[in-house]
Amino acid sequence: MAKEIVLFGLYSLVHLLAILTIPKENYFFLPSKIIPILILIVALLRFWKELELRGKLVALALVFSSFGDSFLALPDAKYFVPGLGSFLVAQLIYSAAFSLGSRLKPVLFLPFLAYGVIFYFLLWPHLGPLAIPVAVYVLAICLMGWRALARKSVTHAFRVGLLGAISFMVSDSIIAYSMFLNPEMDRTLASVLIMITYYLAQALLYESVKVEELILKDSKST
Image 1 (spheres, helix red, strand yellow):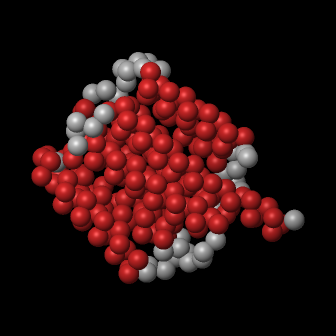
Image 2 (image 1 turned 90 degrees about the vertical axis):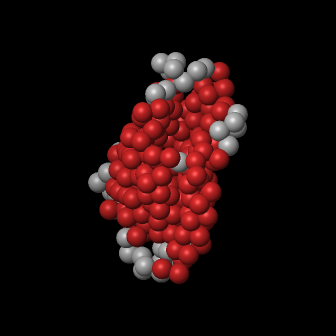
Image 3 (image 1 turned 180 degrees about the vertical axis):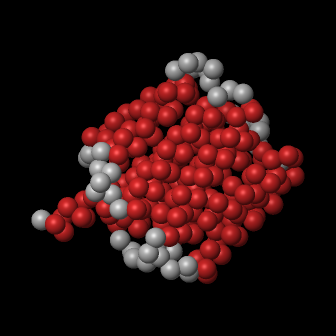
């Protein structure tokens, strides 16, 4: 296993322990949350010249994800919308990365659209002034899932990337469920579930790029 994934896993565990043991206001909480994503960013930057456009887009999406993590780690609720906006940009960049060299395949959007419409319909009575931002974000996350599924070949990188996109959708769904549909849900449990699925998503999306643009390229050149 690559050392960056080992480091990513170890620092992810550190943040999960932080969720269980310290309050969000603690100065250690924010860095413990973003360090795993920074590890993936640095790992991709090391091979920047070898990366194709898809890999560079994924690195950029990780950067915006780190911005979203930073905003959402802050205790003040006013940072929720900037955090949502940062992740919205990340989702759109991931969608662009998955769309490179892929056909549109609109029929594959239908299951994601159905999920998004049903889930938003359940959320809508509880959203208040966040109704429009959340609607845009739900559309973006469904778009990412669709573009991950619509890629032209069924390879290991495709499967890993699709699992990453779905895991991202699960993480965001838990956020919405715990914030709007079940605000009485234990916050610690919700945070642990959110971060496990989120870290898994980012690791899988990173791995899909590494397999497709670094490992396979090296094997073809030797």
